[in-house]
Length: 366
Image (cartoon, rainbow, N blue to C red; front, side, top):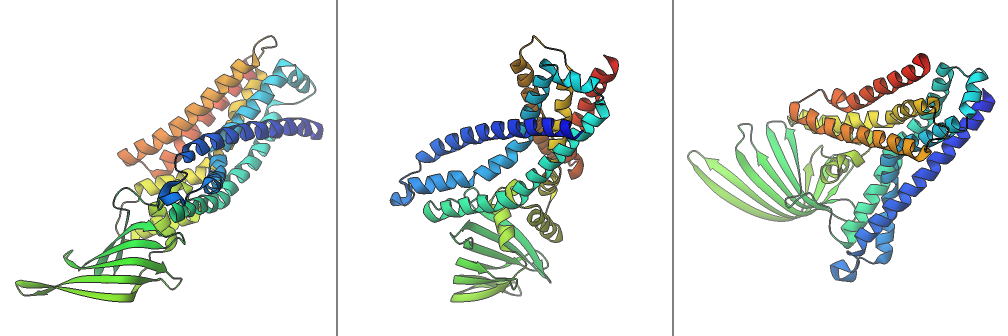
């Protein structure tokens, strides 16, 4: 078995590394071409070296997205080539049971699971945030739509709706509007601030403040307007929550996304979309195991004189259909209010059952 593992694992790792490098190089080229049109923007502040750094910072995110499908392509290529050259047939006649082959491939797949999780949860969020901060510094582009990001918070008998237009190059909120409501849901104040600094003491240090407050006295109300240079606002909204609201939730670390979901839930906001993204983050690395199971049946096909590229292409189509179904289930689950874990895990379960059924049919019925 050591000889088998050394042979199979070495071939698969080499093939997966080659396919991954090819896809990353292609995406790097496409991203760079897309960034060329931005060079010279913002009075020439955004230059060629900034575009190269930004495109490089996107590589870990692409690696995280590509790993399961490159694992599938690389494993299918190796399995099909072994079947074509009868090497896998020799291994079978030498005592390699189907269950043992599946067990060993799943062991290697678990290594890819750990790699995918590490890249997606540690490397990708840091590099993606660095790239976005770079664009914020030279292009002022970190924002969501025309109104920025919205967050909500409850404090005692008052509630707040916080609007952040964009982030500064240091990752701090800018263009802040804080709408304040009483326990009856009536608007009582609006605080505007040019900039803010999120501290570790659960407070924001606001700068350049304009506060408009509605003072009600019986049936009459008067509007008071005050200006301040600085002010401290106590809040539980952290810098990570702002990043989740302004950036894509699938690019955030799992723990940051979980904390943001808890914040939304505590403030009575819908969490369905973010819960689905959270469970997709949990289950996505497991896709590597699904891809391994999907690739193993190709070792039991008989196509000595056939074209190996055709079978690899069919495997690629199967992998693409898996990722399309994964995205579709996320949208359908959000629309139909499915259980978030089910919407995230259903495609993997369906393809695992289908792969095991194909594997069993090829091994036991032929």
